[in-house]
Length: 273
Image (tube, rainbow, N blue to C red; front, side, top):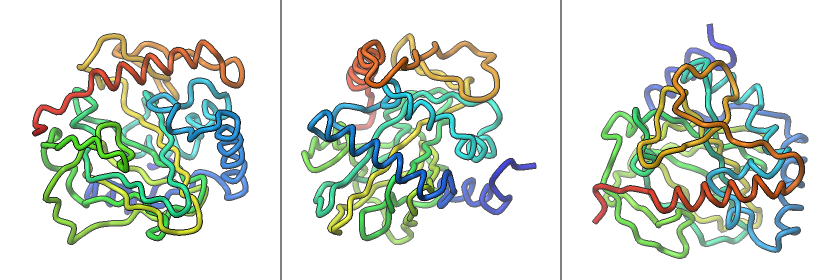
């Protein structure tokens, strides 16, 4: 018996490799997260996503709380089972009238996981629509190869670390994962996805939480860490992430920087040109 999703939603995820919308919180609670996000950007004088990637939750108790949200975990449990590791999280935001984009790509090509089984819960702090550049997917693409050829463009307008791009994607059956604030989408790490620029007068603020079962192993480097947020770990593939004692916890900031640099150094694209 599913905990949160319907059988139809589970079937849609299994068929398309993505699902939206799923309610995580009320809109007023999402607004409180948005205010904390905006206060953080004001504090650091830069975009949060320029500094807080891969393990963005580490230095912040409010984000550590969010990765343990029961609605999010209930939905993820319905899809991947009762034992859940949060191995990372990242901000993905576009300002109003923002020409930046995310190219067609596949997460699993770069994650280095064995097996290639991970999902991303993309939580909207503000509305994410076609007009603001929501996430869009190629349905069923998760049923293909777990490692696909990418061209690394390093385009400065591309929000991806290397501008990694799958060329020649058939866009005839795109599904837009439109969300209201407080809702999330979930996509398989093998699903080909992207997002367009945001020409609207409203920002698009999203927070992506990356989850997998403890049986999944990081093969690109030793010492991978995560947070067991539900169930048990009977495999020992993941060390334990430290948890923030307060805002901008210095030990957590240092751990985040190490994780981000290690991820960037170890990213593999066997079929890149």
